[in-house]
Length: 514
Image (cartoon, rainbow, N blue to C red; front, top):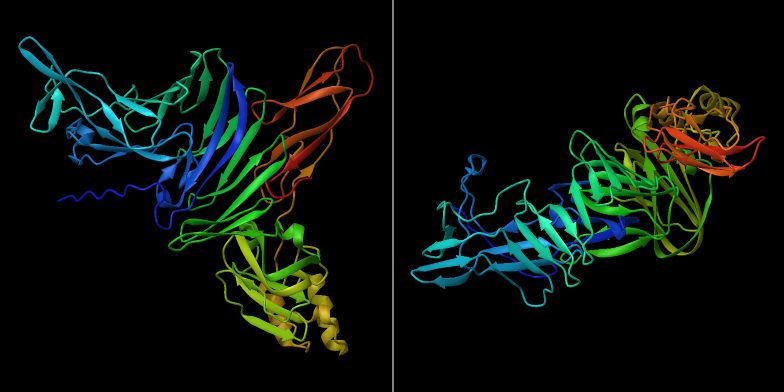
């Protein structure tokens, strides 16, 4: 037996949601904002951007309280009835409800019904469903001609129409995905797996991976958005290659808990989620190694940082030992969700060593009050070159054999150079920080007023084999764009110009650029 429970409120207990506009373009005369939406209540549902993430323009997460026949794959559906409830998420991210209330019609000798929906109080959108003539049997409704249960079920045709207060129409298929948008001036946008196309032919192009997740979005002006996922299907980064901006995401228990940005967000779940802000994103190992960060702690300060898959796999154990040194506070630093394996405290300093076993975004917490200096280090990387190798081993061995205590060489900060330090270094031996792509320049020949295509895919290599993303900057005596394939630059000299021209080519793996 099925028991359907309806929770009718705009905000659900422990729910966290957020929306972000990734792209704003003029498509065939219509301003279109591509909005990416996250809902923690949908964390186990696959959307366009992985678990919990949806493309708000396309996905409404339509749900009804009509029980399943378990034979829908055969085309057998349960009938809608008086009072059937339907919920969907509006383009503005509000979750709203409608009630099925067919309208009785009468002609001589015949009574029939037409589908109709009543919006919940305060909902300024209207809803229609597939038009047909209905007959009733008890409280259930059936097609007057075919006698089939009334239940819009076509995956490729219009099943519902949502109308906004400004007159914009959203035609939805049976699963609630937008298949067409008609704006108030009559312009039409067509939605498909390959993108969004205007009546004019202008298109926002989609590329998806084997799991159906969006990996690339390309606007008509060449703006390219890139989305990356971890092995669990979670969205971990969103990049705008033209702007050179990137946002990264971290998760715990399959729910979003970290968002980088200015400022970053830290989400703590409870009866009501609490949102804190992180002071900065320290980046990945190649960015924070060797850096001393100045900060101010007002009881609690938060910083995000990342570890890469290649970094974990570079050690024999698959574990990376990471140390945090703090000057200006005797309170131990914390990495949320990880217990330190070694700690030291002094009057105005603190040290903790952590065994990191998972890649992705992490959260560092500092406590105290006042100015502090701190640094993150890969334990055993004594010369701060991003590697733990023979050079580091020689530095430590020489210090031990010479009997000269050096604080920076004391890996566990216990005040003694000993075999314990060698053991920690040995655990990290072989570590190599993920490095930025290596770019090689080139030269090409073109003629006056003649543009030239330049394949850039062969001009860079990534030491770890990571995907490479391109950005063209600082053109001299011409203009340059990145073609839709993401691997070709198009350079057009200034009209009438002959001579030397150039542009700079930046290659990024999503974390570091060169």
